Length: 110
Picture (tube, one colour):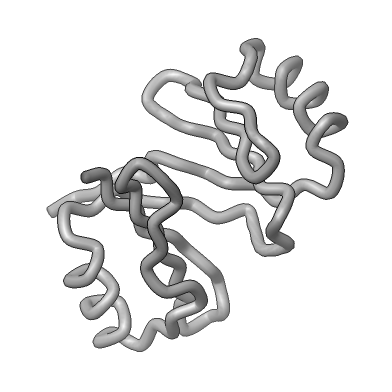
């Protein structure tokens, strides 16, 4: 099954400065704005700002079963960076590192 990257998350040190930049860069205001995540909708893509991470940018794909997807990634050599985590409202995310050391993400909506 072909997947699309639906979310790209950038680590930011100063969320207020980053919002000023991304508001201009993306030409829109964030649809969600909290101390731990700022999210923008740009067409079919979501662009996120994460003030609590130094990894990135990280591209996320939406999956129907995150547990199965993590196992599939590990089976082909990936290493779990962040195990499955509920980030609110039943939204599950996880991160894996591929064999070249690049971190990618998986996201499951409930």
